[in-house]
Image 1: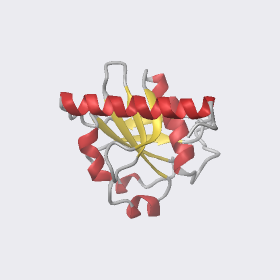
Image 2 (image 1 turned 135 degrees about the vertical axis):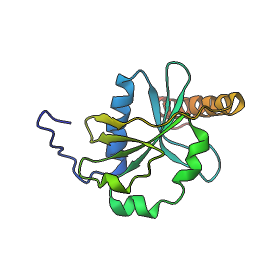
Image 3 (image 1 turned 90 degrees about the horizontal axis):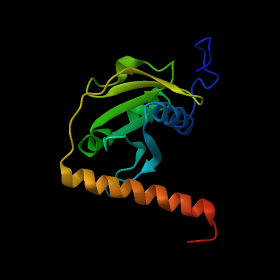
Image 4 (image 1 turned 45 degrees about the vertical axis):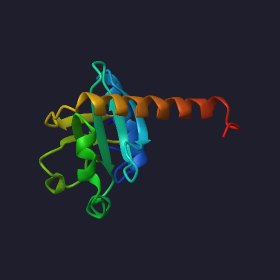
Length: 150
């Protein structure tokens, strides 16, 4: 966000929001990966791994229509310790369910508006998700280093 509080990214895409969210999460000591598949049929916008192994999911919504068309989000709740919505400054916050935190984001950064309630993952699910996170991140790094690799 710029110092005036005005965002040059009003109505920005989910990918732009995800970039701001990643920067915000890094400030909190988290590493994040966009578009992670925790289970077949689910693709989260941002998955973050905290310094103590906590797993957060952030779903980025660029507009009212984007939010209303997504009916899969409740399926993400069992796959994280905390669930957040990331939206632009002009998003109608009354649309967002109470069972998630709220992050206001743009392409430059983000700020937490409401903390998400904690729901701890089982140890088995945490291991599975941590492996999924690591493999997704490593695969993407490998593709950056060697784009010709399948």
